[in-house]
Image (cartoon, protein in one colour):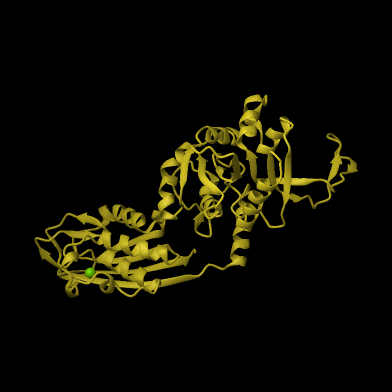
Length: 399
Ligand code: MG
């Protein structure tokens, strides 16, 4: 069987409140951009579905304002085969938007909440297996209700009775439904866009929907506390492995050469002498990254004896090392650096340099620090004969 997956991530999370810990800094982003072990919540969620053979198409509905940011994620986090689309005002509207934009003629559609990042690939596969096996129109991942439930009077809050929970289940996602049944339910349900899940739409059509029970923890991240709990859970399951690397570089300053620092061209009468473009800051960062991940040093990867690397841009060098770093399963956490340079003043260019480095390393700008120093007239740097850079990079194992 082949399945189209729709991930509903269109809401802004109005019940979620915290000013801190955002992975991305763009304004008006959804709660799913908040960081969970250094990756946006939504990226965790999507990663859980990356290696499910039955899923052949993936659409993710996000707020329109988030589209430019998420489109970069496919590359940054190596997510395969995802189409990002604009979400609706409600969850059901987002799913409807996605439903109309499916390209494949798959019989089944799986819908999942972007805010459930802990669903296990095993439970997803179980759902697929069950759908192939039994004749239902829909299947819902669910858990038995465990707490004791009381029915109370609306006004007085007096208990009327204890609810028999033997047949009560909490509906989660993913929910796997026949596309035909879901589309028909959207057409006929009087208030389809208010539905909180796919099963309730199908129930209205008197379609057969079954629960598939599981015993894992698949919470919906609704409040900020849920995020902290999920993080504690993940840290307990596998504490993230972190490493730190140190980098240094120094280049002579001479006339008739451009001056590049952090991938940004700095207007100045002199530039860095070197086999490459002489970007001492990027070289220091690249070496720190190589050091943190046990990949040797820059000379082993880009020898200055090779003609083909003559005048190579250092952004290309770092991009190539980043690719190798990602393949080894490392993700950059942050970088701190010093640029020791007498002239020119770097102040006006610092923001552009940070932005460029953030882009190259696939991290947010606030995780990049560039500190400009002079050498107070002392030594080669102080006399304006050289530029010297130091960098320290921290990485975290993510795969
Ligand atoms: Mg160098």
